[in-house]
Amino acid sequence: MVTEVIEAMQTLVVTVVYSPGLRQVLEQRMVVPADSTLGEALQASQLLAGVPQSDMLQLEFGIWGRKAQTFHTLQADDRIEVYRPLRVDPKSARRTRFAHQGSSKSAGLFAKRRPKPDNPDNPDA
Image (cartoon, rainbow, N blue to C red; front, side, top):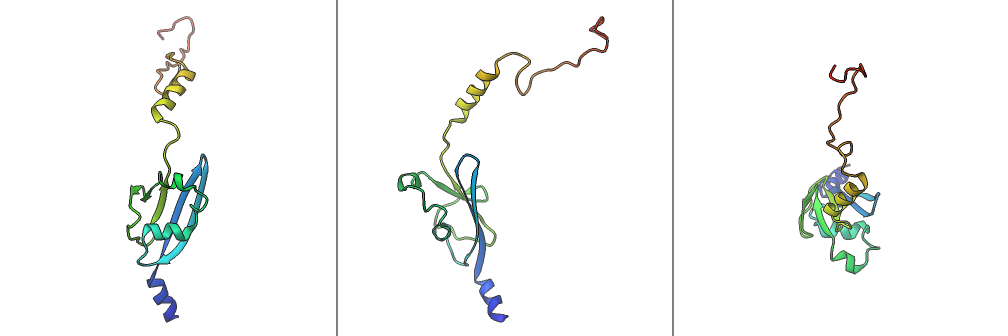
């Protein structure tokens, strides 16, 4: 019992999250030594084992949505996130959606829509 408590004090539980593609999320919860760094946890998780070396150079890392370096020392319950580069520029994606949607007043997120009148003979009512 005492050794279990000592071991628990010397380890941390962290989560590593990586999305290799669209609508794919790999998540691994793991136990690491208390003085582990972000890089050591990534190596232990093996989530990036299939990623080519050329793609590895483009990846960035963060903890709970804030960028972090691989030498960052982990804390209990940290969520390590692996960020891959965007495949589509957000501005060009928005332009494409707008082109398909059209520029009429009835389309779009902020389109002004008037309620239908109760009396079709009197539109001002």
